[in-house]
Amino acid sequence: MAIAREAEPVSSLREIREAGLDRDDLLLTYRHMLVTRGIEERGHILYKQGKIPGSFYTGRGNEASAVGVAMAMGPEDVGTPLHRDMGVHVTRGVEPWRIFAQYMGREDGPTKGRDGNVHMADSRLGLIAMVSHLPAMLPVAVGAALAFRIREEKRVAVGWFGEGASARGDAHEAMNLAGVRRLPTVFICDNNQWAYSTPMHLEYACETLADRAQAYGFEGVVVDGTDVLAVYREARRAIEKAREGGGPTLIESMTLRMEGHAVHDDASYVPKELFEEWAKRDPIERFRNWLRENAEFTDEEEEQLAGSVKKILNDALSRADESPLPSPDSLTEGVFATPEDLDTPHHK
Image (cartoon, rainbow, N blue to C red; front, side):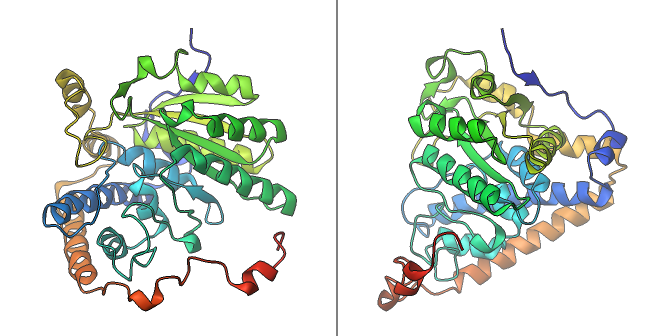
């Protein structure tokens, strides 16, 4: 029997207005989702052209979850998005051309060509770059939340992880500490049902991963990760609760990884029927239909928005392609701390 609360879908425009979004915000949310998918679709092309070194990872099917959470964050909040969460970077304001530059290892990418194509973040936008050991980012988010508590700042740290990462000790340690100290943290589990090729029933024995929150002493919520408005509503509740001293929340966002683990993986181990079922719940199509039924979204508006996004992405590709490769002479810049950095007390 499930313990965690199961979130209901958003039923009306009035409900979402009460949650803090007006019509312009709704159209902006849709735009962010289109940009997110467009970036990753063009990333596939860049990879096939041999312009992306290493492998290439996407979050197709996860656009609603990523954008919905990011829309709920405050400007001073911080987060640790992972490789399925491109929509977080887009929503927080990372320009598409810089993302393409990052993909291609160019100087104008967020890591200036010094890390893998999805190991990126712009710290000026409250984002902390991921590492390959995905659950290791949760203690980082909790550490940020602890710093906010010590400094008496009304800021929240959002930590992302997948259902596969939940089996690691650092995920447990992060949630345990956050629960004990009632830190301003929100944990987002992108449950895309496959930890590489391992299905959910071989990953954990509880009914939902959000059920585990009770053992840590805080609330667990399960939300349909293809419903951007439900994700936004639950993330906003959790973030504002944390901001006001109410402690952490674990939100389990249910999606399906609609492509393989990366471009080298054809996902042949996923039943074809499962892909077909979740394709019917495409988050972009779902939100488009909701806008038409509830927000008087017209054909003309859709055409104009789609055309604008296409131009932005085409211009972004051209600009990124002009970005130079980093100079070998600058190899260690921004990699090691300077003596001045080390002399700065850690609490400042």
